[in-house]
Amino acid sequence: MESPVAKKGTQPEEEDRLSVLMDDVLLSILRKVDISTAVRTSSLSTRWRQLPWLLPELSIDVRHFLPVPCPDSIAANDCQQAMVALTKAAKCLFAKPQRKSTITTLQLQLYLISTFLSDIGPLLGDVIDSGLLKDLDLCLLDDLKPGDSSELHMLQLAKDMYGFFNAYPSVFGCLTRLSLHGVCFIELDMHHLLFDCCTQLKHLSLHYCDAGRRSVWKIDAPNSKLSVLEIDTCCFERIDLVCLPELEKLHWDTWVSEYIPLSFGDVPSLGELKLSSSLTYYNTVFKLSELLHGTTSIHTLTLDFQGENVCTSSFFVFAILSHICIFYIWSELSSYAMDVYFT
Image (tube, rainbow, N blue to C red):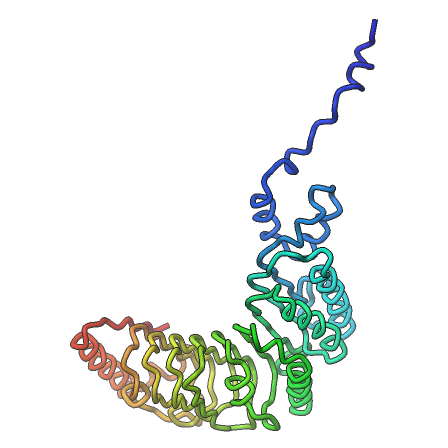
């Protein structure tokens, strides 16, 4: 008579419940974890081996490779080690034998370190040239904190960035979103790079960038697809939006201008404007109607002066409120309402 133990040993091994799920379900699970964890799942079983290479959307963030918990001040060696790990992950995910499906969106955040850009560039170029990447969301980070960056350091970042784009021009073909940190454009043609070269760009974010102190940035790009422009603590005296026909949102946080920081030309699609800056001793009072001159479609206006000097001058408050009311009434007559926020 066969023993119960023997019978139990002859039964087929119970199948992993996760592995029997459809690919779409497993991929939705992998989308919720960072890329290093997703890659490690390929070693779980034969069933999981190819799944990371089937992800239609990839997010590779160098900050996920930093030590945990991440310190407030990141050491240079930690940045380099994180870039080593990121480069290794990118080589793995972009490898041609495994990667057969198209990447609809790649979010790539990395430090602007030239020695590693020369490794990342060919990987990006190959996947773009093979038609496996549609949209690229690229964020180039500064490995130093904003307050620690010298002008020479910012100029070097600009040169490294320009060298990267110049060496791998195919990147421009699918670059739809670009975020730059700590770059000084004083020795580069800023307009040519961001608008003549980045022809597919729809979202641009600049953080702690400049083109020379108190410079004027003139944007005249009738063929640009840019719909969102975000400026954060950049040293521009003024931005002249001469022509950006598809611009829908403009956010500017912290400016250094003594006068009105913006002027509007042909921006027919601009519907959302957010301005945030603490008032300093060199700021002068300006009328909201003068600031908004040239706009025709704004429906949401957010003003944040961070509580400084706004309530100390009744004339200033009255001037702003009166012009908001006038603009709101004018908006109503133009058949649309305008939301105004004070924070």
